[in-house]
Image 1 (cartoon, rainbow, N blue to C red):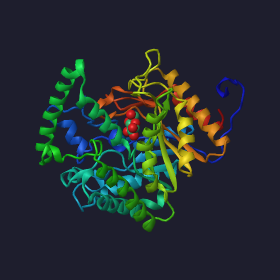
Image 2 (cartoon, rainbow, N blue to C red):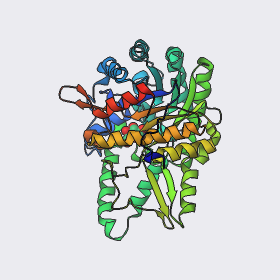
Image 3 (cartoon, rainbow, N blue to C red):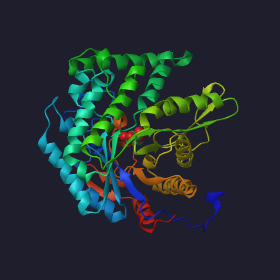
Amino acid sequence: MRGEIPNMIRKFPEHFLWGASTAAHQVEGNNVHSDFWLMENINGSSFTEPSGEAVDHFRLYRGDIGLLTGLGLNTYRFSIEWARIEPEEGKFDETAIQHYKDVLEACKEYNVTPIVTLHHFTSPQWLIQAGGWESEETPERFARYCEYVMSKLGDAIPYVCTINEANIAIGIKKIMEKHQSGGNAQVGINTGMMTRMQNYYAELGKAFGISPQEINTFLAPRSDQGMEIIFRAHTKARDAIRQVCPTASIGITLSLYDFQSVPGGEDHAANELYEEFLQFLPYLQNDDFFGLQNYTRSVFGPDGMLPVPEDAETTQMGYEYYPQGLESVIRKAFEHLNKPIIVTENGVATDDDEKRIAFINRALEGVHACISDGIPVLGYMHWSLLDNFEWQLGYSKRFGLIEVDRSTQKRIPKRSAYHFGSIAKNRTI
Ligand code: BGC
């Protein structure tokens, strides 16, 4: 097996993109016009803690990009925050544009290639009040914002991802349905959870000034029409960006588990691949690249998804530590969508940095094997550059290559950061 050949030298292509990812809301801080800000700060919030100042990347971005380049990386994937650019519908904030211009300028000074995401989970509060991700008007609104940003900043953006993990609501819907359906011994727990959720949604409705049923944030369970709206938002944005910025390479990112089966589970695994990926292929045909994000695998048996085996190693997120999943997902994605691939996210939540080092090694061995077989993988972005705000779970889950002491905002690169950087510098694993 490949992983067992100790002295084999694997060299990556010369222009390979070596980088790390962040998302605006998770690192910048004080994203006050976003829907998440409201959701985090109301009574009975389902978030373990609010994002607050995050890791103050809004102020400290230059030093962070300097650290990234100092490690030996050459690419930075970050997101532009719609709620900062368009805090009120139709009113674009020039100071926010200037901020991201400065971030892009810092990338240029440090010789770092930017990969920019235009929507990473958070939306402006006004969008939610106007129907959010179930409204027929959202594709148009999103495309207008993207066109505006790219007309102002596009010259400095070689790679742009319209929407991060456009398929994520499918998984969220399944989790919600599972909880709602309950099950014998678990009914008590689920009823309690549902009541808390209902109360939370009632508060949220008041805060947004709409009814709880109308709250359609990006991460809320989505109807089939809602899924279509998200993908139409992508194609509309892509076409608008092409008009104003024909030089930018445009893609989307999807979250894909490595779907596997044991005997009898083949149809479930195939169905999952269809629901999470294949059904969306028609929307991706005119993209320039595919942004692939993978964190683990899920295994299916005759009755559906199997639990993580008891003896399996798990991450802080509770899912299986499975770096070899990346290779298999890249192969599957390329088989069905014959386009250049950028791994836009891959990583592990752990306090054991040796585990992160081993994860990076195994993931990159897989990427290298794919490239050797002729699959055009253009780059690998590790999630994440910095320990950051892990959405509902707050700051307790640590995905970063760089630790942050939030009491001082001091950055402390981990051993894994130097390790990944040296692989990047030598292009060798
Ligand atoms: C998201 C990130 C998130 C990461 C780790 C991805 O689904 O794009 O925002 O922090 O996974 O859970």
